[in-house]
Amino acid sequence: MLNNYSEKISCVAGFILVVFLALSTTVQAQEKNAGNTKPLMRTAVISFQPLTSGDGQGNTVICPICGIGYSSGKILKGSENIVEGIFIDKLHELKGMEFIPSDKVQDVYKIIASESMKEPLVNVFKKVGKELGADVVAVGYVYRYIEREGYKYSVEHPASVFFEIHLINTIDGRIIWKGFFDRTQKSLMEDVFQISSFFKGGGTWMTARQLTEQGMNKIFETFPGVEH
Image 1: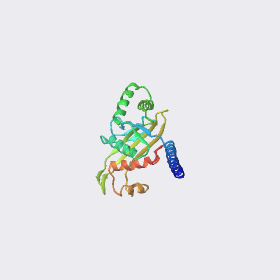
Image 2 (image 1 turned 120 degrees about the vertical axis):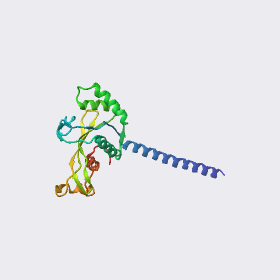
Image 3 (image 1 turned 90 degrees about the vertical axis):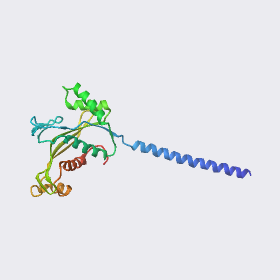
Image 4 (image 1 turned 180 degrees about the horizontal axis):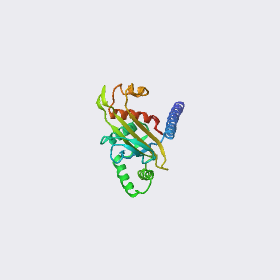
């Protein structure tokens, strides 16, 4: 009887040891995974803006952030919202992103911009990011947005889109990424070098939105710091 009791004690002790080892392994794995997990990139998107010369018809405009002069064009009303929406949709496809609510971002931006009118714009964006606790601030400008006139297989005037997006580090105000897309769709007879993008568009004349989506996919190939 004593032997049976000893055997039971031994079995219980063995069971406890197995459970303990299993729990210990699980905890260690969780700690290891937690250590390997990258922190989310907190992102604030400032409302995109259209930029043209004073007459609204085009000519040269200066990027408010990098100071480069560009040849702009006509901009369809509200197109900056279309470009911004496509940009945000692409951000949502990426891993490791955390978004600060848009209304909160715009409220903070308006207050800080009104208080810092004499400061460089990059400093304003840096202040906005710090106030919101963001790692990066995204800012976009639309320089041209012309809709297609015609149909998929026949056009009088093709779609033309030109936009630029900057990603600004809120710690030091550095521009850590710039997405730049400037294209007017052409036929293969006009420009054989556009053969790849032409067939990516289904071999048809794209709308301005379709051209924007194609351009956004292209610039996101170099988007930093997150997994695709």
